Amino acid sequence: MLTLAGHAAAVRCVAYSPDGALLASGGDDGVVRVWDLASRLAVWASEKEGDPGIEALAFSADSTFILGGWSNGMYFGVAMDRWKQGWLHAAHNAAVRAILPHPDGVRIFTAGWDRDIWVWRLNKPKRIQLCKLPKPTASAALSPDGRTLALGLWNSGIVCLIDTDSGKVGKSRLVGESEVFSLAFTSDGSLLAAGDTRGRINLWNPAQPNQPPRALDGHSLPVYGLAFTPDGRRLVSAGADKTARVWDVATGRTLHEFLWHQSWVTCLAMAPDGLTVATGGEDKVVSVWDVPE
Image 1 (cartoon, rainbow, N blue to C red):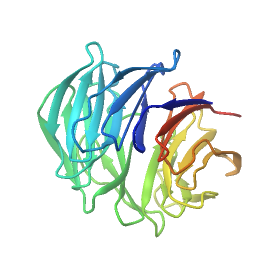
Image 2: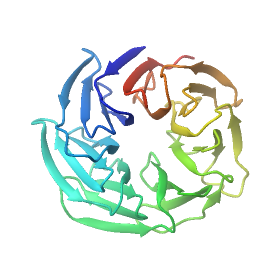
Image 3: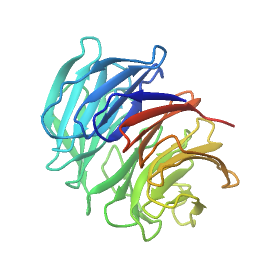
Image 4: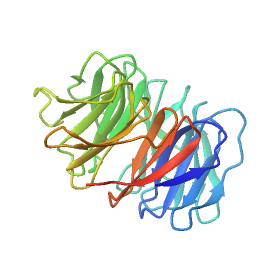
């Protein structure tokens, strides 16, 4: 297990580069750090931009930009070849909850606490509204083919599925009484996982919304991060109970439980090859660890 220290406050988001060589992290200190995982060194850190914290991070599909969102609603891009800010735009009237690059390498989706979902063109200032939700976004995930956005709505157990081309809201799913704080698709899009504030993870096929979800019970507090391995056989979760868990998807059993952090585990990202996972916590550190069988 590798520990990356340097943040001065809680880590809220982590993201791997498409080739898995770099890891970006951000949090309440308002600083983005980029780590070279081979050397275990930070290769770049942004200057603190006042008080807003970093709420969301992602790499563009072609690895040319790091994309980020602040708690004040600003959306920014940093060119990785020059490590200079490429753009800074007012995206939302409240915090940016998620940044989701489309696999086409052109479109970027942002979701915020203001209920708006915007579509951006990479390195272009113009935005188009995809849709407006009935409630703010508490969690978001993009299907691997880029056709469907899954959005957990604030203060509800509802997950909405949005067509990314038309903006049409598909059939919503009530997965429980608790708010959904994390979402993840399998690599083939056949399974969607939703982690809620009570520590439960629900699994279902998004193409069969009428089938009851299957529940995984183990966390005792909110689940803040989810990711499937590329083969879909394992699910990794992270929660406010300080634990990260590895689940067998077929049986629903917890295979491993880890205490890598001293406080809440607030975010999670899986490497593209599925061999390692990065978690960030309230303890200000990022942990990078191998996914066991």
